[in-house]
Length: 290
Length: 187
Image (tube, rainbow over all chains, first blue to last red; front, top):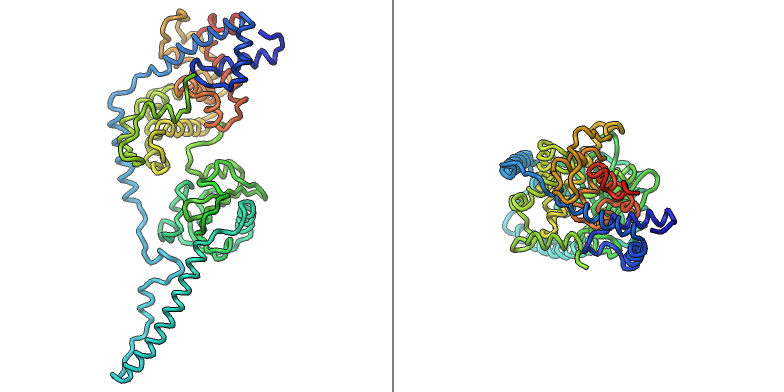
């Protein structure tokens, strides 16, 4: 084996990581290791011994007796948990399905009921017809404008989005929003399934964030910490990933943030804290070894 | 050279359910409960803890089933949930002191013959003496059959760190299992 201790350790580490019949190493790395093994009988002996012991350990690793009835017990636990979850589901409040439109019941309560003679009714009908046509034209224009507003892409780079979101998060002053467990958020602005949103979180509407309407979910994270998930309906922004990245894209001013796009929606998560605080809010089954 | 990614190996082991991405949790339990339990047992070293951990894994899987976009990768996904749950559990428990990590040689049987099959309980007692981090990396190598690159990716560690950590963990395990046969003993 090579006399240089660093090279020797490197060769031994490579031998440990190398599994027979697997393409674990790059060609250049493999060629170097093969040369080391070929040149040194001690290295060759160590390689053979390690492979032999690895095989024995590997076989023993999988040799575990599975308890009887485990599958049944697991299914029972899952069924109980599912039943509990269904029973605890928050009540649906259809009036809150769109925060910018008043509930139909409230409109009906304040609308006047007309009482008039047949002639007056005809005049009123003609006036209503003209007014109705004008209103329909205006409404169509408004719908087109709103549709354009909702579907146009957010005209910011990913870096701008992160910076603006942190700025908004840091400077915002707002009333507490609706409790998620009590009032259902607007269907077009759902929270991302990739983010852990507790029923104790709150939601509120935000006007003009990135030039769009948005819903902000103030996440319940406990111990006085803060985190907000912003949801914006926008066109496709090719610059953004399709899921929350495992690490925040920007960390500044004690906040961590990242933006991503899911279908027609743009999500920006801002967390007061470091990378670990950010990662704790993700539902992804991954994380650093600590 | 053979091999391939873990997802590809999953494809060889676990046929995708007919019809695409819709995964039934009961099917997931039926297909994977034994391997998940085995993995959990090798990490925790106790039947009760392993069953609790297995239960946690499938409860989380049930809640996050929508995240499983590729049913063929179900086993890899369950293993990732298991590792994270185990690490979380370890963090919540009291810190293990260095003295606890010393091997109690009286509890281990005499060294086995080089070609004799390794006793499963003997392996477990040796594993129990290692740190949780080393147990995880060894389980990924020996049980999940991960390449060090895949370990690095899953644990979000640099490849160099994984190589040295894996080498250290393997040496420690061998030193406990085969004190006279391991290559380190000959040096």
